[in-house]
Length: 88
Image 1 (cartoon, rainbow, N blue to C red):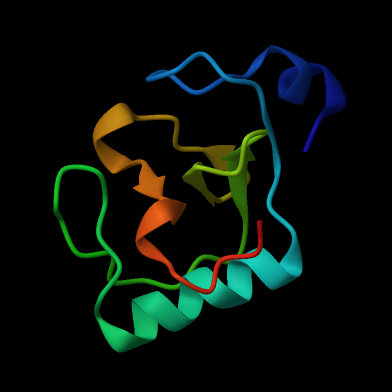
Image 2 (cartoon, one colour):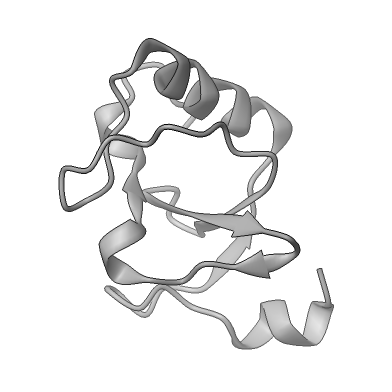
């Protein structure tokens, strides 16, 4: 992801800056997807695993990246607080 774009992106809900999600973070998220327990903030089940994502610097909210485009929609945010084994 372009560093300049990353420098200006932030969570639309909290205005917290974002960073690329680490591999270990994505593994925990994708376990939740596989189990069918992961939901967006609006309660919609997340049905597809995430290959890439951006996460707020406080580690609380995740946004998927599709075809190298960050999907920074508030309704599609994923709270990591629902994942008990998420690395903190």
